[in-house]
Figure 1: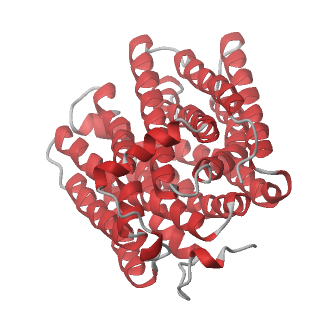
Figure 2: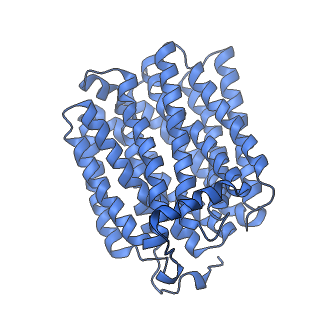
Amino acid sequence: MQVLQEQNPSPKRPTLAILVVITMGSALAMNIILPSLPAIQESFKTDYATVQLTLTLFLAGLAIAQLIYGPLSDRYGRRPIALIGLGLFIIGTTACLLAPSIETMIMGRILQAVGGCAGVVIGRAMVRDLYDTDQAAVMIAYLTMAVVVVPTLGPMLGGYLEEWYSWTASFVFILIMNIVFFIAAFFKAHETLPPPKRHKAHFLEMFGSFNQLFRNPTFAGYACQVSFCTAAFFAFLGGSPYVMINLMGSSPAKLGLYFVYVSVFYIIGNFGTAKLAKKVGVLNMARLGTLIALLGGGILLITDLMIGLNPITFFGIMSLIALGNGFCISSGMAGAIGADPHRVGAAAGLAGSMQVGFGAASTYIAGSLLAYYKVTSVPLISVMFACCVLAMLSLLLVQKPSS
């Protein structure tokens, strides 16, 4: 690994383990309640479209807050922003646990997201503080693999907690885990951006960085590619509980087990990225992964239209999309963050915001279509396939590998 020592003169640097700790909270919180959405719907006596706002607005909160955390971390440093975010996450989780109504639950989920997304931005920015672009792709892939392991078990754990106790047990688990994470980060999340490297401009002026980034075709191409690939996956996350439980008659526990299967392929893709990105470059990895995801989306749509889907074919073909995303999302994110070395925090925040914002939009669209048509999974699959197509087209903006 070629570490850019001059970018971090401090002898204390955060380990991969601590980067995992500050990054994975939001993903765990998002995934663990997925099998419980029908139960939450029943508990609060509401409709599925409303209860899905606990996911859609969670994603929206992730998207918006990342726009703020990126520039803040460029000015004030990575460590304090990470700690503030973890604190907000704990408060939001407590609000969800004690929620007397679906409206309070949704507000708590938004606060969870606003706090949890700090770790996503800061973790990636810390990696880019320490490594060059290709090596950052390797490190982000390793980080993603590690981060995905616990959230991979989230739906399965949430499903069993739902069947053994109730949906509130998932929030108790998240609360305990994130108190531990906060303590670990307080002692081990060392600063990677020394004061001489920080921006001294006023906070609002730093948002001018977003305009510069959008005008950079390398950033725009990679960021849109990552965002559309993520949107395909998030549409699946939001719609699969309805498809599996309401349409296919499966159980929350089985849904959680199927999620593990899909996530294994996503981890395999990230492992492949970690091994190949330094050798072949982030652009080639992004192209390969997006092509695989597009192929999976096409097969899934054709299968649904011609013979219909069952749990095995639904999750089995989805695994191909997950494999492609494992190849292309880490690579594309490293390319986006490295597109402008002077705006690393802003790029991490903006790219992450786009990624989650597109995901929130796809989740809302897919959920609304499922609620309207009620008896078919075709609307969900169509949204996923369209996102894969747009991801491939986005890469046409990237003219050369970022360096």
